[in-house]
Image (cartoon, rainbow, N blue to C red; front, side):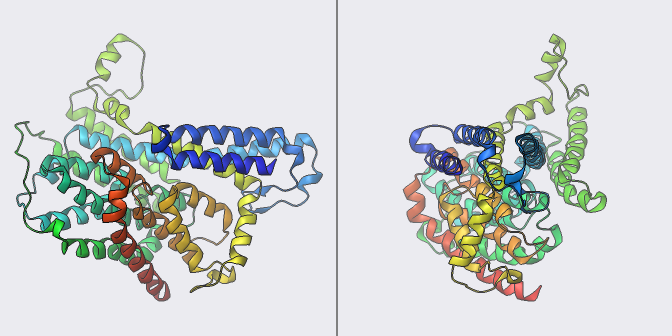
Length: 463
């Protein structure tokens, strides 16, 4: 039965990676393999001889000796445990996405666009790279990429020029997301899972992340594609919203407040995100002269109001398919973890891989393993890779291993355009060809990835 579950995961994962070839959205195979995996576990519960206790992070002893009822009860508790942990991540992301959409509702990002009054390609490259690096640390790399490419489309007229900028935005956004607990889904997973803390994450990864962004940007600035000037789009006649700047700084400030709230209250991050969303929503409703209404009542009057409510409008714009994809993939990985499959795989990986650099607290996990995880995140999605590492390794909070995983998984995906959420969304927005990116941008991303990894090995020795 374990073999069948592994095959379900492999075929499901293959369907996810070939999303653009088979023309099936990746959320569908993610949800299907999650449901089938847990169904097979339930049907074959009596055939399993081991079970992974997520609370104690170790394999249970004498699981095979339990009766059917006890095994089913344990499976239900484990399923509920993983659903709760996954829901923490999803609710957090929902809040962050909604705040960003509220900012966009008030045209808040036009403040950034209005600052561009030059047409030098090299200056534009550095401006967008630095903005991507900073914004992704605040509003996550996926959202930062969407925002900046949207701004880029309003500034640069020629698409063939824009896609070069988009390629460097992907690298910079992924680098910026790695050192912030809210900058990347994988980093958020490690933060919410109490594997990394905000302070240590910054200490370990800020300098490596800066190099991961700056080195490729510097090399790109020397290329012919970024020489000379660019033709700018003409200004539109759309009147500027008088609250745009206020909502931009209020929204970004509210998201930055979330880690502070966690440190003060020791509550899960999604609680702070819901508080931030509530505060931003209040100002949004007041500024739009709408009623204070966040829940549907089902009557006609409310339906009419909802179309004018910035909160309702923003909720309708969030990326729900991404949320469902994360649900499916995280719960599918949880199925493999519960059967102890990931635990066994970690043992085999640690014993078979040659050592390179540091061994973390004598656990036998080498730097080479983590670097390969980063390369792997370019080929397949980094979310399940990090979810798998949470089940594979048992190092304590702020162990260097978790910070290196955060860096590798967060930035390694830049090496292929399908290797990160930022890359996939840029691919869709600008219709970037996979092989164009592989030829023109991937080598820059690889150089940045290796430069940052080398810097991490140095900073690790200091902290």
